[in-house]
Length: 287
Figure 1 (tube, rainbow, N blue to C red):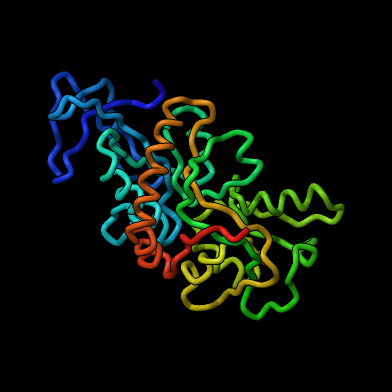
Figure 2 (tube, rainbow, N blue to C red):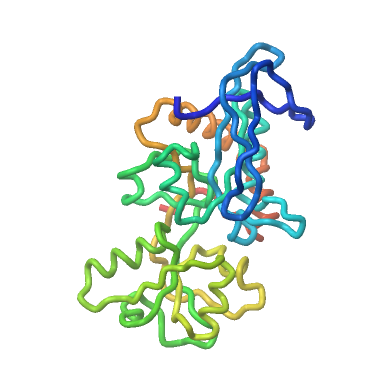
């Protein structure tokens, strides 16, 4: 099986010890956060087999997946997965942090079992990966420029200009698709730093713009140095990403869908969105 198994942690914080199970302290993710790798299988007190799920996420996206002042991994994506974990006793979730650009590759090479990094579903990704069905957020991508920049409103206005984006992101795909379809190209600058470096790069004029979801600007730019402009470029569901054509991943995906529906119905999902993102971005996708 591609998904490893281990003893489930008790929800009161104690760890169930299992005979013959060995927990090995592994290295650190990109952020330096320690992770644990387990092998073999074990059962909980009821004799039920528990499967460990390695969740790939990042540490550089403010309010989504980041390290707080105490070095704890937290944010909207992280805390939502912890809520889901609580309601799936047959699984135990473990976070593995890494650079955003390595997440999908790590999924393909079986280093992680799912990607949680506010991943948008688009045709290019659907060709290689599987997604769960129940979206946990929805948002719209628009152009983002410096507050005093009134010369840019459309992708055509970005021809010959520098646009900052992250490799393998849905926003990068928008600009890459534009360049494939036009002779006059946009100069794509692939981001190597943290998400909050976006503000300084645009405000200082080192780059001219970026593409971002509607909630992102107030999250990364509380001082109001940037603004969104122009029409909506894309409108996408935000989902978890899994290996394609994999039976274990399909079972996990279905289980997560059930819990996401429950969290929508009881208001937990909406509350998490407001707490971490400042608004409820979990409503139905606008067709």
